[in-house]
Length: 432
Image (cartoon, rainbow, N blue to C red; front, side, top):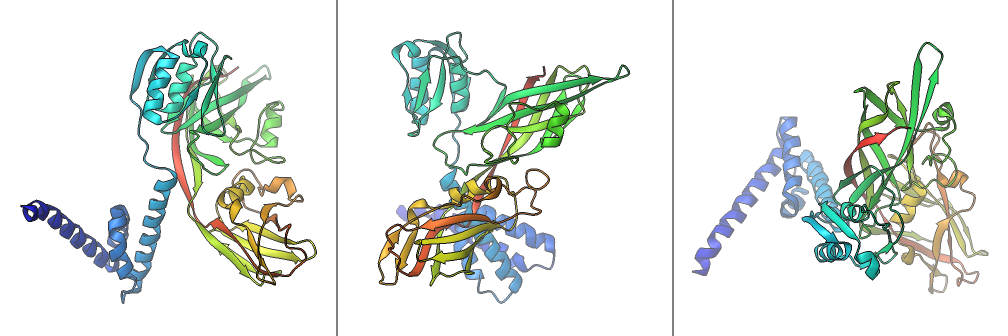
């Protein structure tokens, strides 16, 4: 009986294995499209394809070896990505009642803890939401003043203050919302030209720990007159053209930009009679550090370097007198906005160690050097530019080393980053 019940499972496993072996054979097919498709299918198969792919690394075919290695990296990164961003489970919350009753439902479905006074819990609310952040905004949209903040421990605390009502878009654990909009209308008695700016921001549930940077891409917008609008990153030139842009935060310009704070964009092509943006669509790319690897420098000295994924780490000086090692981090490709925050997010701060000439281990810390220009922003020509990029300077210090020679310097650093693309659509953005 047991054999009879297990037989369908054994047949399924055998069929899966045969299909995977067939895909591996096709990695060496004469048709490049078949090779590409087979590699994609192997990646889609996930963990069950790992062992056959590892065996394929010893294939006589160089094409099979290369594609198998690429597929293994993709599958392993996908598995790591699930650890930092597990599958999202949508809420099924639709009810009208007191805030306390709705918060009890939210807590049961999400496990999040809430701190609200008895008076705040008696506030009337109506909620129809599929995400936590959407539900919280709807709870705070009632007639009574109520807003929320997220504490360091992840608990959500409520205050009896008016919640900012801003147009927003919700996707899984994320919220993209408008923080400010401005318009400048000019006329020369012949025609009226309209230019504008807006700033948007992204928030996420406290359980997530992405890098402190986001980037926006793929904008599509239309005003209420039906005209397509071009959305471009704001810079000092187009902000001045609009009239100064006071109050806007332009991530990527100036000192110490907060790349998870509001980011400003310029609107081009607005209709003279436009009073709002009917829709603003786009994508937010949010990055998560994956599993960290050991970065080790034996007999550390000036000029030694180590590569961790797309980051090159180089020692620029080793000072026994100061118990300090100076190093730089540089990125070979990709978005440079907020690189300092990215490096700090990829670094394990509790792993910084040095071994002295007597074999004794010392705990240290790595921090940005004070002389990083513009807070380490490496942008020429706007966010995402790479021309003229300079390495970021960091310092590793070891207070207990006591003027002894360094024999080893090590720390843990993420050699890969998982990028999650979050789509958004904000509707009905009023223009002044």
